[in-house]
Image 1 (cartoon, helix red, strand yellow):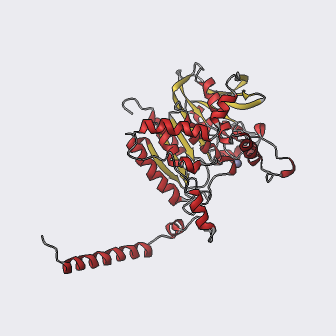
Image 2: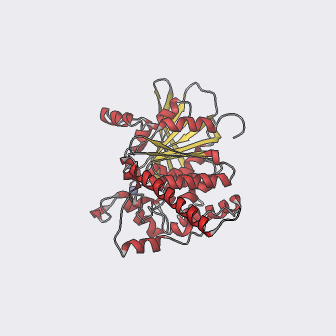
Length: 391
Ligand SMILES: [Zn+2]
C-alpha cells in the first residue's frame, strides 16, 4: 500500500487524538491513591535539584547490561562491592582472628522449639548475641532461617519472640514481628542475631551527642574514618554466624533463607548479594533504588555506602542474587518508601533475573499496611523455593 502524505497526516492526527484522549481519560479516572502515588516523593529547588542529579548519577561502572555474560558480570561486580563497602579490608585485618561461639542454656517454648541465647565474637572484643531456635521432634537436617533486625534496640528479642514484658509481646504480636519464632514453629532452624550498631548489646555510643544522639550514625562516622562501613561490619557478622550455623548437624546448608525488615532488609540484600550460601532472600520494606528520581536518599545514614552510584544501584544488588530466590515485599502505607520508585525497580529486577534464566525466581509483593513484615507472602514463596523437582 502506498501511503500518501495526506493519509500520513490524517493517520498521525487521528493517532494524536486517540493518544491525548486516552491520556486525559486516564487522568480524569485516576483514583485519589494513584494520584498521590504519582506525585514526586520530594522536590528540590534549583540549583540543588540539578546539582543532586548531576553528582548522584555516578559512573555506574558495574551497572548490569544485557550484553554482558551474567556469571562474569557477577564475579567482577561482587568483588568490586566487597572492596567498596570495606569488607575486603575487614577480611584482611581479621584474617588470623579465631571466631568464638558460646551457647547459653536453652528453654523449651510451648514444647514446639528450643531457644537459647548464644554469643559470637566476630572480631576482638565484639560479642554479637543471637538467639538459636531449633524445632523439636522434626526430621533433620532442616532449612535455616536467619533474620537480622533493623532499627529496634531490642530487635533480636522481638524477632525471637523472647518478649521483655506484656507490652512488648502485644506490640510485636500485633505486627507479626516475631518472625524467627514463627519460622521455628514452621519447622525451620531459626537465628535472630543482633545487628551491629542497632541492638543495645552492640551499639557504638555517641558521647556529647556529636552525631545527633544517634548511635547508628556514630557507627557510620567511626567506620568511614577507618575505611569500613556499618554495612560491611553487619555482613561480616552475618557471614561468621552462617559459618557456625552450617556446621550444626540440624542445619541443611543448602537451604538458607535470609529475611529482615527495614535495616534488617538492607542487611539481607547486601549479605545475599555477597554470600551465595543464601538460597532465598526476603528483604522487607527496604529494597528500593538508592534515591528517588529527584535525588532523595531513602535509607538511614548507617546504610550509606560511599560511592555506591559509581558502582551501580540496588538493581545490581538484585542481579548478584540471581538466579537464587529474591522476594521483595513492601507495604502500601509505608511512608518511608515511594511506590513508583519501587515498582520501577521491581521491573528492572525481573528483567535482570530474566537474563540469568530465572525470571520466575523473583517477585514484588505489596502488603496493605505500613513498615512491617507481611508473612502471608513470605511462607508460600519459601515453600515454592524448596518444592521437589526442577527449580
Ligand atoms: Zn541507622
